Amino acid sequence: MKIQPFKVEEWMNAHETQARYNIAETCVDSVSLEELFRLTNTDDTAFWQNFRKKRLTYGDIKGSPEFRQGICGLYRTLKTENIVPTHGAAGANHHVFYSLIEPGDEVISIMPTYQQLYSIPESLGAKVKILNLTAENGYHVDLQALKELVTEHTRMICINNPNNPTGALMTEKELTDIVKIACEADAWILCDEVYRHLTQRDDWCPSIADLYKKGISVSSMSKVFSLAGLRLGWIATRDMNAIRSFLSHRDYNLISCGMLDEAIAGIALSDAENILKRNRQIVRTNLAILDQWVNTQTHVSYVKPEAGTTALVYYDLNIPSRAFCEEMFHRTGAFVTPGECFELEHCMRIGYACDTATLRAGLAAVDEYIALKEKEEQV
Ligand SMILES: Cc1ncc(COP(=O)(O)O)c(C=O)c1O
Image (cartoon, rainbow, N blue to C red; front, top):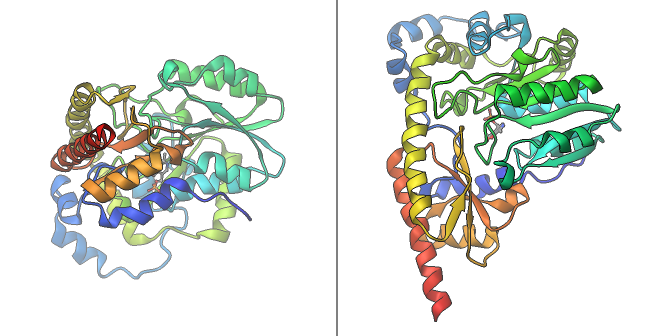
């Protein structure tokens, strides 16, 4: 099976371990087990004493009840049988396409977004139609344009809410309008919701799985719970035919997710509100810092993110985004992601949910690079 290189992941793989100021990361500042136990008031010793005696079997094949119950708490209408644990959201997205999409199927996907949402269906032989999100529209879905793309052959519409890289957040009304369009074609909606609940205001963030029977929500422990190292995610839907298909395919490529990872995720989910409180505070404090920087750095501009952990920032220097980001990385240590990874130019994605000191130092290093380029242009 041929597949396009995953641009954003290749970029991260090549640079992130050597980055001086990593403002490319999309997870909210990761936590250690020690911090997790402290945040959730878990008795560390008791946990290990209990776990160390457990035989390391495959565990609960469909995922531990505590883990799946914890996930249900993030939705309004779901029960444990609606949840399928996977290896991260990356595993979940892949699994949804692999289970439901066949050669020749029509799939609509937004752009920009996480590349899985268009490159995997394409690799499976689907006919992928792209719906471009534009700055003029605040990177929200143009419903008329979506309607025009949908046909009776449309099998799935792929969206990402909140959006990576733009930080746009769809309202419940927008989501239900998309549901109406999908309903007419009896199409699934796959909504990648890995940044859901990372909001700038305290409003509930609706999920596609609560709003639409054929809505498939994908998420994970990585971004919202700062636990990417668990490599644990899930698919959530009320469509039991889809669930049966996921479980059947899962016997071939996964079996189960791992007892220790699920036990640790269960701890985080049992006190989700506390972790969310910490993480919302980080994204809110840091977005204010980023916003102030964008407003004072005269060479950059953006549509301010509404949620999530990332922003798409345009610059006015005449340098392609990959060259800009490579050179900046080597000369000043600022590590961001080139717009080219999202098929866009003269822009970069900044991940602002790192620790605040790194964000400040990273933005100062971007300033330093822009000043260097300005000086060189004048010579
Ligand atoms: C939109 C989106 N989906 C999925 C993923 C993969 O997440 P995970 O670590 O859960 O596999 C990412 C990671 O950057 C992402 O941004």
